[in-house]
Length: 488
Image 1: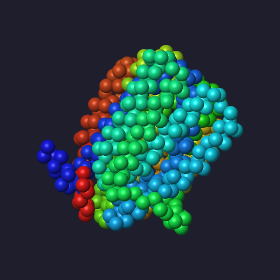
Image 2: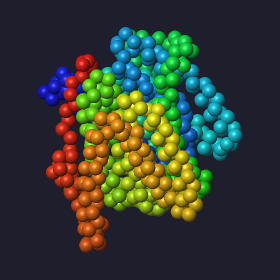
Image 3: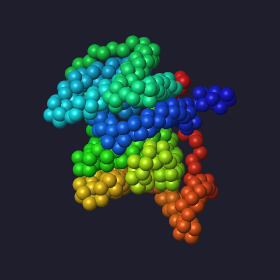
Image 4: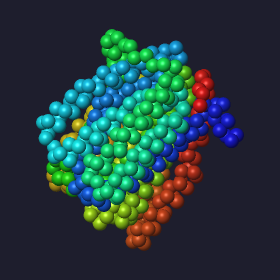
């Protein structure tokens, strides 16, 4: 109990970030375990073709989510954490008003898309159900902005966990107990999503002492002059992360889409803790950039190091462990996805560095430059995918993702060049590259000598963690002092 008292008394310590990340990671991880179980049930019930339809519905639903979000969550957390108490209520009212204003055009756009694309009725139902779910989850994230900004993340984490686990449990019950169709099995998602949105609304009311929705068009224009890069960043990132899935679906069909989506499912589940650590560190990064540059540089370096360490372990999990359990869990029809998962393992390490870098760029008000980099990454991904997929199939999509992301990392570093934090990040990246290359080399030698895959599978994490500790790459979790005490 003493450690929690210490954390509360000094919210500027990195321990606060770790505590909040633990709340988010624990709840999100538990929810993702449930989501993965649902994925397994759907895979065994409907096969690769059914998962392909599910993936298509998810892709459209996530696009609705991105347009509805409009960068409000990232912009809102940053600005809310910086504003004095008297201005926070007005800011939050602007955020809510703008989000409801954009909802109607988004729904009309979805209707036009469905009319023009004329999907099969089962796919149509899936798209509508998942889009409704993402609208509710987006609203909940916006209503939870005051809690996130004040680093009180227990309620958002628990609420999301209860929503996802409850919905998943009912969905699995419908599939196993009643052999429900795919759309019927997904109906609990929007129902529970509406419930968590109500909880988030109550949280916002409690923290803001009332929400004022009045806003002038001039204020909307002023806000979007600052917030548009956040919206553009989310949209470009979505296009990049889901673009290959759409291209694979158009070129190779539902089954290939199911294999590729399976690999992405494992990858996205693995990188989730990295994103949550970034969310937990984001308010402190934003405030320290304004108040204490040295503390900001230190926090940024520690965030990058933590993400890289976690990314290294994720490479091991995706390359060695997941392929062993893939077919036994999902069924023999998914054996072809093993190669996809192994290829995406290397993408995980690049995402680890990018995840930290994006939060740093947001905190430094460099989101406009970041959007330009992400746009270039998306274009590169399109070009490389169209060149490789016809000849290499799904593996071409994996290669395109890795190559585009690698070039993007180089461009992120170019954006940060000249900034004080660049030296810290460059030093950390060089140190980690040397460590990781050494571990890969040793693991490769062991495999070459023994010809047994389990030998490097065991050696990799042992040598990796030992090298992290011996070289001192593991950061010490102390961030510095913040001027404002934030209630838990």
